[in-house]
Length: 273
Image (cartoon, rainbow, N blue to C red; front, side, top):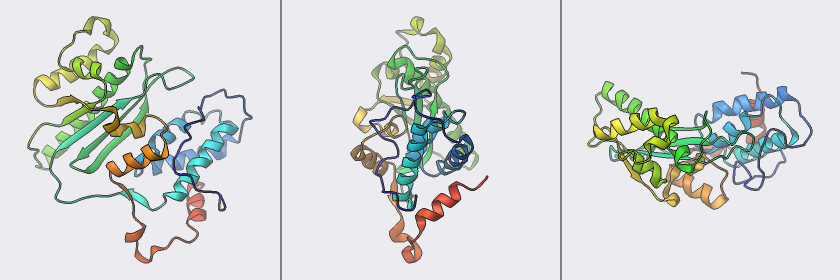
């Protein structure tokens, strides 16, 4: 990987990953080592969360195409090795939660991927990208479980704030780019058609009615959680990374040491946990 070319996105938009892709199998032990290390790395780099989650679904039977996608992710990390989350001071103490989900994006079982980004002012606090357990029959049914998961995480963060005596001037704002899911949060007009998500419906609606949470619609172009639900183009990736505070930290590093960083990265990723 020392001579590998850099790439600007963690996952290609032209290649669809699935379990049985017809390519030859690869060494699963080596694949699992790399993916296991990347899972730890995704705890500090939200831009690779979706890709790592996707590649983790093939650890039991990786193929050549999966391994190629993994090496592409390493090439992306080579290009962004000094990138990290920028923490700003003197920000407004407002909790903004972005909730999103793709619909039937998994080609093997047509399950959707839920994702959220939670920010305090302009600082990123929490994020997640995870495959849903149930199959959604519409985009609204895919978005609403993601909405409930985001609401649950925001309530946990609020409880943490209460323990450390940190108060917010207003209730958290939960943003969703699906009008159907947004309207269901306070007006269950389709309640009878969605019995399998009734628990999520009651959970979010109860929080909204008690003014613990405010749910609003956000335009798809302003949905920051898109970064964690699907592969995106370079322009979209760069735009969303900037919006959530992912920046190149090399100008601030002492000495600006960049030599042999690719070899060091690959060595660390291949080490046993």
